Length: 189
Image (cartoon, rainbow, N blue to C red):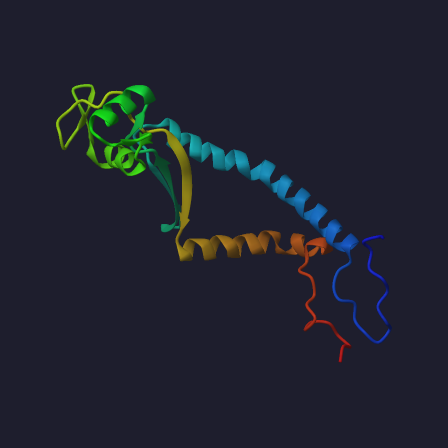
């Protein structure tokens, strides 16, 4: 059976856009996004690359006429401990009485997240002072992302400018206009 809608009785408004109309609107919307993505992504990436590649810069700030509009802040991984030799760690955990066929998850988490300390190039248990075999410190610092944070005033200002520049263009593409709700339909009773 076709996905096209059957005709509605003359006295009833159709329930909404047809599958064809929905597909056409989605196709146009995808191409509009791809068009703008191709223009905007290099600009966004240039800012991300600047932050990522300059070790002294963690944040850039966008200001319009002296008003802070947005800031872009890099997220980086913090140093963390990880097991790099599971067998050595397992033997050590077993010597501590902390195994039940496998290392207890609570013990492993406590070691990696709370008790492990990096001392003179070795991972040491801060509670017992013992070297923990098979565990090293990952120095972190790996780039995760650059996240924009807009001020309300900055977002409103930019949106107003964009609406002035692109509002008429968007209105000229009927496939992008919001679907009329049942409340907007004229002539329904």
